[in-house]
Each structure stands twice: as structure tokens, then as C-alpha cells.
Image 1 (cartoon, helix red, strand yellow):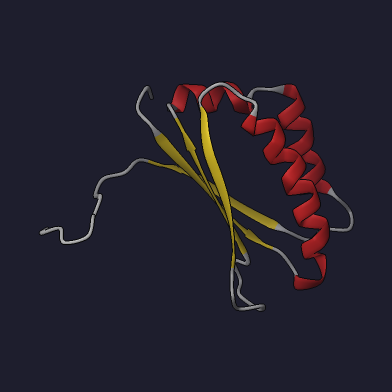
Image 2: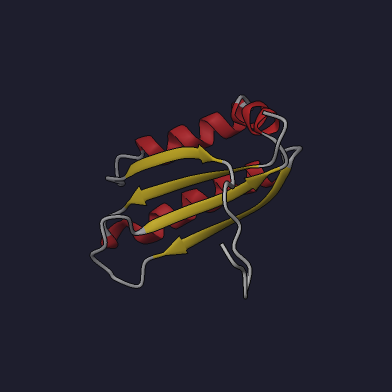
Amino acid sequence: MNEPITMINAFTVPVAESDRFLELWKGNAEIMAAQPGFIRARLHQSLINDAELRYVNVAHWESGAQLEQALANPDWYASAQQLLNDPDLHITARPSIYEVIIDVEPGAKL
């Protein structure tokens, strides 16, 4: 797990709860952004309001080992629990970790 990895987390979030979700997500992201090995995270929002997966977070890390260390951070854990267990939010998170297996650039021949 010393190669670069991507963590993708898709969230089901009711439209009416979006502002609260974004507020908590930003706080959680600030903690992760301060961790060694963090490269970048981008939160995508569906252009379709009633999409099941309203938000998708794509985060890049220098290595799986560094992500593992970041996930063990007690401040991040507390922030994640606050997001997932907030009584005003009814969200479902679907996280997984990925590695690039095909990279297509303009004009590429596969």
C-alpha cells in the first residue's frame, strides 16, 4: 500500500439536508487536508436533485499507508462520527479505495 491511491465515497443525502451535510463535510475535509500524504479531495454534486448518489467525494493520497494513518487520527474519527451520526442528517456513505488501472489521455489508443 505504498502506491498512490484514490478514496471514493458516494453519499446519499436528502436534498433538504444538503446544507448541513456540506457544513460537516467541510470540517471533516479540513482535518484530512492537514494529514501527511493527502494530495487533494474534490466533492462532486449531482446536477440531478433526486439522484440517489447526490455527492461523490474523490480524494487522492500519496499511499494507502498514509490514508490508513490519517483514518486512525482521533480528530478525524470524531468528525466522521459527527457527520454520520448527526440526528438531523439521514445520509448513507459508500466509501471504497481504488487504484488506477487504466489512464486515458486525449488521443490515446487502447
